[in-house]
Length: 209
Length: 283
Image 1 (cartoon, rainbow over the protein chains, first blue to last red):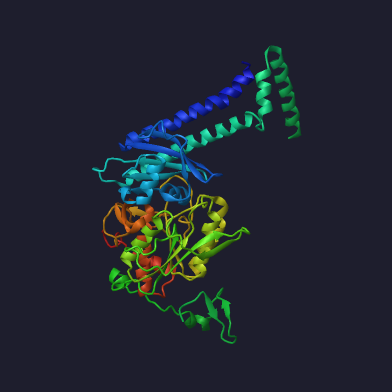
Image 2: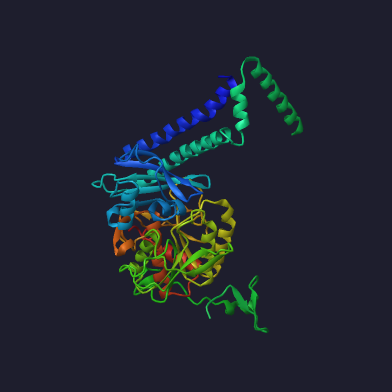
């Protein structure tokens, strides 16, 4: 593998994996801190107006990744759209929520803390913590803590999305796919010549600006 | 006639802006309500049931015939027509989440005789709905509601200027916007504007207990922890969040304005300060 190809691969392919691990670690810690049965991150798919399971810790881990549900109705949709965190302690009495949860995930939580994942002015998705122990009375400080956690999860989700977009641009018919093909075809002296060409291009562009 | 931002010019029967105050115009801006030396909760809302106060819930809709909400005067939604224009139309969707019903139930519990109207600005396809929120708010201000509950916020900077203009327009037209504060490390609006009443949560169980915060941008704390609120299907859910503290303060505003309809938002905020638990030496 050439240096250029390795750099492209490490910057994009490896980054995807690393960011996914970061996101997974975030939901694991969220679950542990609140002593909850599960914690999940949902990513907003703007075009489809759907939320997608992106990382899950605890109940449902391994099965739910990639599952989708509507993004602008229900509790998660409300949290996403209004940018406001919400804690609900007896969800089972919301029959519509319970039915939809059962249909989409097979797991009907009793309680849920949900908080929007915000990076600058964009809402990327929702972090939810399901079924924390009910014997301990909720304190507002826990909601604040969840907000701080959401900030970290949002940054991880943002990095993952950026890496994904970069990879899409480099792969197949993507906008930058020619660059990836060039990188994969270079060997030995070819690479030196190609890098010299890129440096020359850089000098021309620098002069123009 | 109640005090107005406009002073009637004597020789012509039209209103001119009160940019200045001539000596002979002083009596024409007499203030119809004088706050007593000590503004107490009894003076502010004692005996008030909210009758006559018009409250708007800008949210996910309100479930019809919910026993904890009762009569809803009108339900409308902001919809995007086929030509791309936003319109306010009568709405039969009810509540797409449950949250609007929860807010309505909280207001109804504290101000049982106030008039409730639902403006739905959330729903399928509304995730990018900053325009819809602005349109709904502008409509609510035009309709002359005295209190608009906004348990929601936007982080989109492109809407900030217009939202700010609307908040100021509401303030000058005597529509009190009561907005949820954000307990997250991001910039969001409209709760940060000085012309609205911004609300965070306290942990106490008394619904009429609220606190003034001398360190804004959050100006008041209302009850927001472990509330049994109205939800979909005629039932209740136990909920926590600033978005539930907000309708508590909105309801208290409705109680005060029902008893003292001549209060301006500036005076109302002052009454809230004076009737909050902390300036009176604790809850």
